[in-house]
Length: 428
Image 1: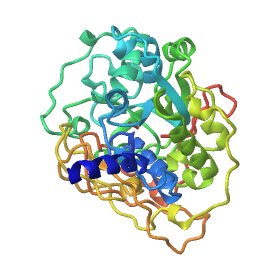
Image 2: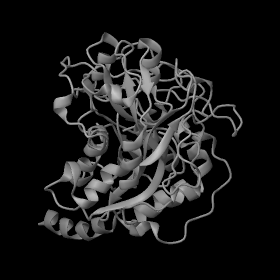
Image 3: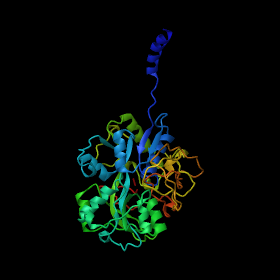
Image 4: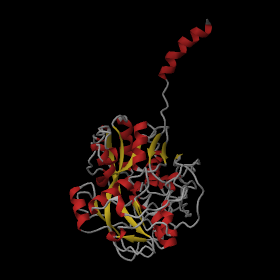
């Protein structure tokens, strides 16, 4: 009897206690991609400012854009990084979403930077132009990422079909891009920001070449599909790349479902916009980000939590937002299959600027909480290379580049400032 009375007394009191929500989780991409450290940079700003009031922002490593949208739909993540062309298809129920109907639940928060479809060729392939890949062994990109969709759009524009390309054999449990090194592939497409850790590794270790994506058919593709833009990789960014490389660009966007509560979205918005200078210094791909670029119009409807007046940027601070000054080799992706380990807490510091040479152990997509780095003695205007996590996921094929090791200056010239789709450099 006494227990029953006590229970009735305590239940109303429990209702008054604050409810602890789950951590805000961002669906990103491969550990050695750009989406993953970008998600880590977002979490780093939110966690350093304690913006979530006791809760933590975490990052989820995934296969990329398509996997992120699926995770968003299933409630595994609350925010997701996605290519703009994939968002277009999701919004209209086309491409990889054909037969699923239009997705009217997606909402935009920020447009972050530009990434590009990049064509890589084996040094023994004889490929020097886009037209040369016809009849060759060409890998269209990682399933679950946006690469196959983007490369298929290019194939369609060129008037090619699968029967015009030679068959190839992938080795189970091995990064497909290694085929460019051992000669089992002639070419491969990768959607990446620049500098790209994977491309730097392949160019330095295997003499893989970057091939321009340009020509009449590409001009027509860009005209017919405005979610693509002209993009250019600056000269001398990668080993052996002495000229600028034209290619196809698209935006990397931060999105959520319309059902994500407005106060959470407003917190993310206010914190990132107030700390935009610090945020822009946490990875080379973010270095051109400004308040205006973040709030540039996108095809998706804006989330309701983004609609009121945004705050003014704050001065540079705190020191916790400064990247670590340590520089370690970044692991490369060894396998496309999921495995099972978790990166350390400083997962947002994945963007090592050195060319990786050591293989890493097999691991799986993981969730990590990016913790603030130990304050260093650098001035607020100095950004040193970030320390990569030790964990490797199915897609961690991005390898560090030599030029990135020398600083965080962006190396992708992107589209002209005045272009409607102007974005800044960066993968899933």
